[in-house]
Length: 388
Image 1 (spheres, rainbow, N blue to C red):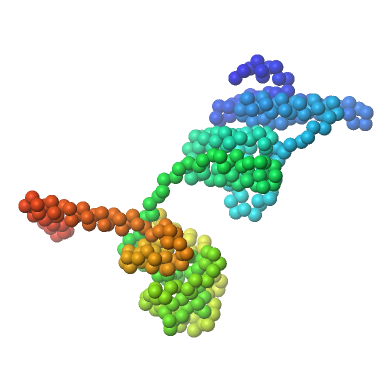
Image 2: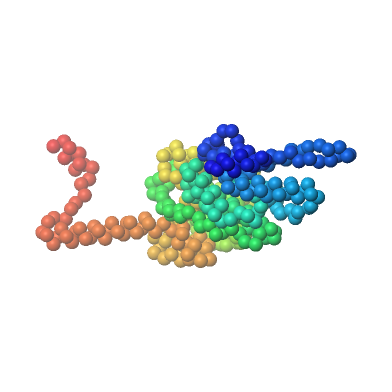
């Protein structure tokens, strides 16, 4: 650090102690004379300049020039600052559900850059901020990309309002996130999960699995949408606010039909009203299903499952058992086949086919060399071997 420059600046100083990242905080402070009722007084102006010495030096010159211009009676054109833009953006976005995270990310960026001119922020500043945040907090790539997404939304908002000519955050590339392989539960795990669930929750999970519908669709299922004579049902209130019936190629399973028929008789043959209601006679909120479901999964020691897993499991089983991806597409109600391919777990089927292919190869190799075909030793044979 060039301390000679620091000593030559009468109105710039730094904090006595270092920050956690071993950097200093720089401030601007100058006593400015003002006149009130003909009496000369002094007013102190103090501003935070950030943690970077070179950037603080530039901001110091700018603020000092503004003070000198004000003392000469000049009124320089005021440009919008980063802090003011952040405050305005957060005020206009108060309805955002993720506003606490957005506010924290933007204020961290403001502390990193300082209250500079909004137009002076470059893409390199965004890149350095993300690199520093990841190094200090040991953040995952997904978290860093979330911060970048918040910055892109902020600078996009400033661009749309005419304060910027370009969105500098779009010039920064996000980190590559390795695709996670979906771990679909086995039929034994699903059976044990249904057996351990309470009756009302087990019925809802069975409808999830039998229809492949979204949680919002199943929880809003109305008796007027169930056709017992035709063996079909219509799922309303979909993701696109559209009505889509279960395709005629896939009739309502016999088990699901019996389940709904029992509830239909229990409710007194209703013609309308929700199929699933809580103890207060109101529809189940998603949290009332999700929280006990996650507790049950954790108690049984199963893989990390979600309610959406039943939709993926239904799509995978339909695609594998029917051998046609378009049947699963109709079951889920997707308009594009590529969307259905995201839900279908191809990995499990691919591994199974690969194991079968290798098994055939090993059998051929054993026969070619005159050796016997390998046989799987059952539990009884293993116990006998141990006794011997």
